[in-house]
Amino acid sequence: MQMWRTVVLGCVLGMNALCASAQGVSAEIGLGETSGKLGATADLSNAPRVTIDRPKPTFMLSERNKRVHGFKPFQDLVDAAPIGSVLRPPAGNYAGPVVLKKPLTIEGKGLVTIDAGDRGTVFIVQSNNVTLRGIHLTGSGSDHDTDDSALDIRGHNNVIENLVIDNCLFGIDLKQSNNNILRGNKIKSKEVALGVRGDAIRLWYSNNNLIENNLITDSRDTVAWYSHRNIFRGNEGHRSRYSLHFMFANNNLVENNRFFDNSVGIYFMYMEGGGARNNLISHATGASGMALGFKESSDIFIENNDLIYNAVGVGSDLSPFQPNTKIRFKGNRFAYNGIGVQVTSDLGGNDFKDNTFEGNITDFTQSGRGAGTRNTWSGNYFDSYQGFDKNKDGLGDTPYEQYAFADQIWMEIPAASFFKVSPVLELLNFLERLAPFSAPDLQLKDAKPRYLKPQRTTP
Image (cartoon, rainbow, N blue to C red; front, side, top):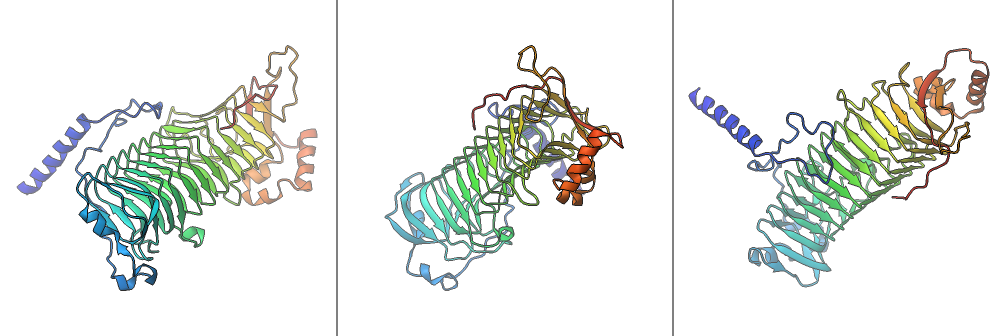
């Protein structure tokens, strides 16, 4: 019993020391409204690293694809290189796997391929201050239980640049790894069904990383779980499921990315702080197609994004979740979507300012009776506005109001959405506007809508 008390006391004292040395959130990301509250600056990045990975299995050469049997093991070159040196291997094909446990720079110049022969993980970094540049990683295994991947990062302050990754289950997997840079990499999963592909980039308990200018195609997701203050900048994603999925990940910044033909663009789940700006998200179509999604998230900014030709531009569920917080939509363009913004709770707290709504089948839907006044609208442009601007100040003389007439049928009964543009519902909608047989619900009211479509710079 005495030993147990000593262990518990040591853990408490250690945690207090960590909290006392916590650092603030990066100013580049931008602090949210909750940033000054208890625990907002907690930082465990200096805690002793605890290995939580399931041990990677080992495979004999005879178990690997025969194409790699004649290749020289790349591990031999790594083992022979001095600590902190620059390794420039001769051009050619090499056999994996590789485990790197010391600071080292490896320059492949686009002429070096490491192939694991379709078994296990190709390359594992278990060190800080490593640079990998210009290498082709291919041929991982297909086992989800052991997270077979092209590259595992298990360290801090590493630079992963200009890699080509293909024929791998997972792409780059970071666990408990901080202050790394992933830049200019091309990542493609194995050619299997979407649901059984691996994630292109995965962050797990990894903070302050920069993921920049990567090209991701035909993968599953890019995810950040329990990972804070990361920056996703200038990336491009095609034909995946989630271009970017946050879960319990706070104060992350997503800017200047281009996501096309994915099921979902960016999904914020249980996230607080941070936001997205200057992104282009297009053609998120299908039954679950959505450019931006929110699930019980709070205190997030959405600025100057182009959300074009998606099934749903923004889908929000119980967000903002924390009391007295907002989700702020400013200067975005919602164009040619099935639904511009869909809010499935009546909590309110969404602030729409200076946005453009054009060409959408429906600009905005709000679940919950009498919830239309719980969100705020100011200076937005609606191409369906039917008012005038007599004093030429650029603002409509009368408020823009959107009501739910017969539309409420498909809002309250999702299965009826199949018929929402059918002649029958269009006729019902017209008749109810002409002579309402039930009190319509106010969806939104913008007291000063823009009369002219604002000029904008495409992200």
